Amino acid sequence: MQKPFLTVFALLLASLSAPAQQASMHWVGSWASSPMGQKVNPGQPSPANSTYRNVLRTSAGGPSLRVQVTNEFGTRALVVGAAHVGLSGENGAIQPGSDHGLTFSGNPTVTIPPGAFVVSDSVAFPVAPLASLAVSVYLPDQRISETTCHEDGHATTFIAVGDATASATLGDARTITSWCFVKGVEVSATDPHAAAIVTLGDSITDGALSARDANRRWPDVLAGRLQADAKTANLSVLNEGISGNRLLRDDAGQAALARFDRDVLAQDGVRYLIILEGINDIGAIARPRDAEDKLTGPELSSALTFALTQLATRAHSHGIKVFGATLTPYMGAGYASPEGELAREAVNTWIRTSGIFDGVIDFDKVTRDPANSNVFLPSVDSGDHLHPGDAGYEIMGSSIDPSLFR
Image (tube, rainbow, N blue to C red; front, side, top):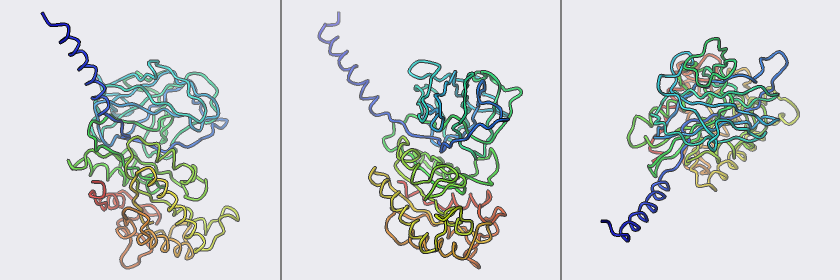
């Protein structure tokens, strides 16, 4: 017969070891997109009584996951009737045996206040690196005048009538290329060095003009390279690019200065930050929206370097290493100007020499034409002289030295 003292001692050891194991596990973002507000105009299909099936690709993997569901730009409380996650198949299908219902404090439904987001309960769902997931969110009948979506996802989202969250296939679904009501997927990690790299930027980070559903953005290329190397497979990449975004003022999405806390500092496990922002501010010299945009090249370059310094300072105060990325060539683009080019060159010189950053990623150097440094290499250019094509994004993502993150 086991002695009572030994039984109590064994129970005590068990109670101590469980919290220790839990303490060694932490959450790291594996996929993210920056939320934006979109008004529901008359004539648009109502988001209510609809299932939004968002298809996305993780970066790092883990034995369990949880999902962030968002109403951050909603003007009313958002009722979520059901939410599911599974491995994505073709045309919005769920791979057999992979569907998992999400709960929120044990409940399958949740009401999200305006301006807020919620994190689902943990799901024991082993997620492989670079896995294609489908996250489905059902919104029952309710009044929704403002949605929270990421506008240019360059990925297909399927919208079905009614609650189709558990449906293996979607019949008469319509499609959009925005991620809606979902802004993040986190995975559990036991590796103490597991961490996230946030890429903060505009359309060039968002992947404008890249192939749809192909994950060809430069952050995708970087994520693939990191996962292919055992030395960096503990790192994830979170893309917080917004097409049309600016550093200094709201335009497409909130200005980078305004969204920084939400899109960078609040990410689970973030340890590194790459900033590629400012070309849309420079473009405003040629296309000023109002008097605030009517700056000279020196005035604008000074304002941009100030803003970049602020972002680096705020990140450093949270222990995040910051890498400044030089602005890629843009002459020939619709809003290019000689004054703007002078500002771009001045900002790039400052990024390379200021010492503000923990390192420099010289996208300008690897994408410019050696014979004419203010335009893209022909192999990089998508054709609009502002955005790279898939080959250009490949060059950008492949140019980043992985040792920056070790």
